Image (cartoon, rainbow, N blue to C red; front, side, top):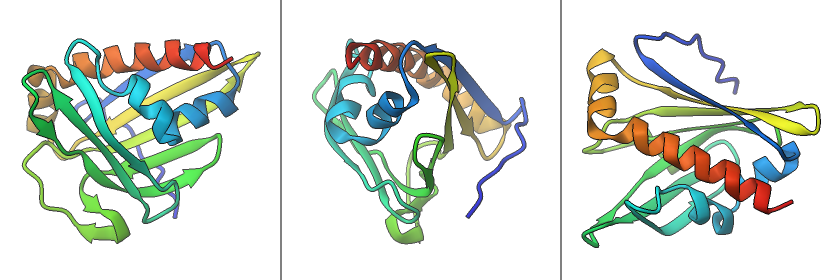
Length: 162
């Protein structure tokens, strides 16, 4: 299954980072639960309470977070594509096994790509949204700011794995 997408600046938010580490370490940080829990949630906002990732089409993507007041927030989705050390795609629009999702949050499809650049990695995270209203809600809710913080934590974590 190819999940190539045309990026629409009205519907999608793109984040990009250069990580001074090889692609294999970036892939490991994106796909191993013990690493995901170290960077996924902005530390000052909460913590990752549970992580599962089956990096194959139809596999589970689950990262539950405990926010500052102790409330648990589930984050469940389905992996659409996994090309080791190149591309990982998941969506919250589907549950594992491609089952239709029921959610009360703003759904996204996340496309993560990594490409060797010198001795490091060019990492791009793209969040596809249903409509402009969802994009605006994500910007207003702090999701975009939280994602920026989490990506900075990802960069630091991957560099600490060297």
